[in-house]
Length: 184
Image 1 (cartoon, one colour):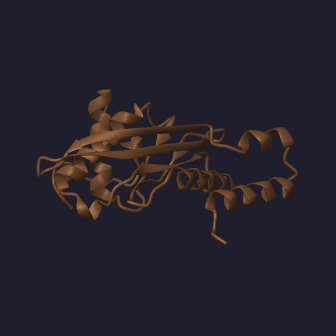
Image 2: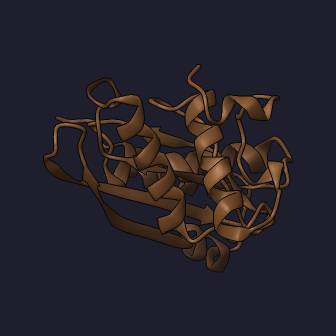
Image 3: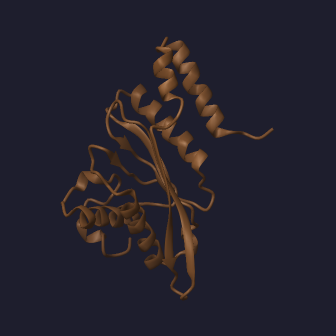
C-alpha cells in the first residue's frame, strides 16, 4: 500500500470540516484547489543543449487572504503533491488565524544539476509564467531547492515584469537588494 498525500490531506480536511461542523457547501468548495497553473519552461543549457522543464503553482483558497508560500525546485515535484501541500498550507494559515491562503508549486528540476545561470533563468521564467498580480493575490516563498538567492531572482523578475518596487511580492528573500545579482 502506498501513501497518497493528496488523499490523506483531503481526509484531514473532511475530518476538520466534520469536527468544526462546517457547512457542506463550504466543504464542497474546499474539496479542490481554487486555481492551478501548469506550464513549461524552455531553457538553453550552458552546454548548448535545450531542455524543457515542467512547472506548477497551486492557489488552494484565498478566502482569508492572498495565497502564500512554497516554491520548490525538485526533480520529484508533481502536481498532486503541490495540491496537497497548498491545502495543508491553507489549513495551517486558517488554524493559526493568519490572513492568508495556501499556495505551493515549483519547477520539476534537480537544482544540483544546474549552473547558477541556468537556475537563475528558471527562477525568472517561473515568475514570468505566473503572470504576477502582486502581494494581495499570491506571494511565492522558499521551499525545497530554493533559498535566499532564488527568491531574490524571483523578486527582481517580478519587479522587472510589473515595473513596481514591491518587496512584499515574494517571501524569504534576503534583507539586502545587493544579493539579487550575486551568488549566496
